[in-house]
Length: 339
Image (cartoon, rainbow, N blue to C red):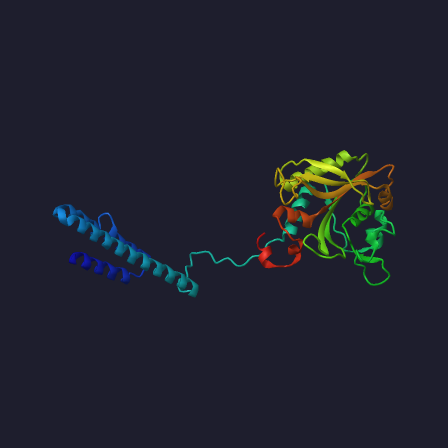
């Protein structure tokens, strides 16, 4: 028993005196290793009288446990001291790379926009950038929106001070007319950007949001061309083929007009994203209205086209399961650093 007490006191003294993890490992090997001092004690137990062996075994186990606990406590102390030294600069290691500084990242809307721009450019589309402060003519009149249309009311549109001809564009569709004025057909263009509407904000609506307009002008364009382009678009967004359907929809600048739905890419039997319907409403689209072609200086007897408007804000919400559109423009770093 006295041998055990002396051995434990000696081990604890050496453990407390150790000043590095390497030194502590050496002490651990000396006492607890396969050929260590504790192993020597255990090897002597079979030579003891039969009635003394159980007591000797229990004492040896207590000794081992006490040494192990002392080593673990010291190891934690040395590790904490090492961290503190690094924080204070005392543990500087010139061979290590410098610490990383805080870095920003692209906004999720920017990420999706660039991804779609790459996709459409690979399909032969050009990228346009239209003005956010737009003329009434391009935003409404040239797009076959009559003067008595509700969208022209001040309750839905931000009009600039003055004679009422300037406004914050309510959609990216004015780029259709500007593209027709700028390019000789046939051509394909997309126009991503911010839009503004005077409406009450909630989880699904905000006064500022992002869209991407698409326009193709060529001869003998049909709904089949539109469907093919939309399937390619969805494949690029969701990285797999999705079943689609077209529902009739009214939009003044297309005829016929459609609402395009796609099978929910996140479920098979219904989920919160598709509201248990297995379909998600994605975008309005259709064949360009003859009046819009005329406003763009093109002859509808010779040229046709299709157009679509993709809500980038809504697409980001779908992709990342975001439940409130207002998060996207709140400039909350805690939210943005997740992307």
